[in-house]
Image 1 (tube, rainbow, N blue to C red):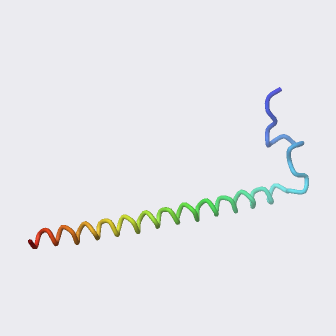
Image 2: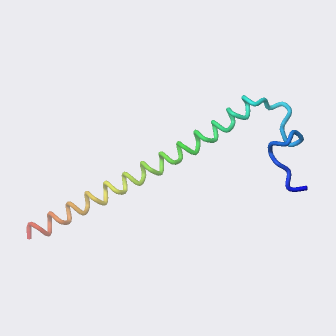
Image 3: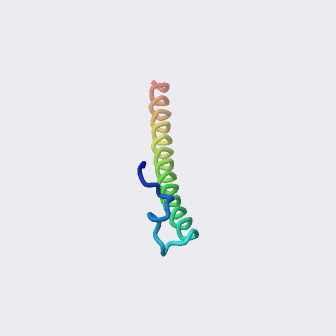
Length: 64
């Protein structure tokens, strides 16, 4: 006999309905999506500031 599966009836919480389990997965998904969006925004900010600094540095060099 292999490891117990989460889909087997004896591992399920009898008080949790199918809709409750879907809602719980959706909440976890929303947290993951919000975290991903935060990291993408942070990467965009760092990228923009790096490009801005490079443009300023190149314009200073070009004016010499």
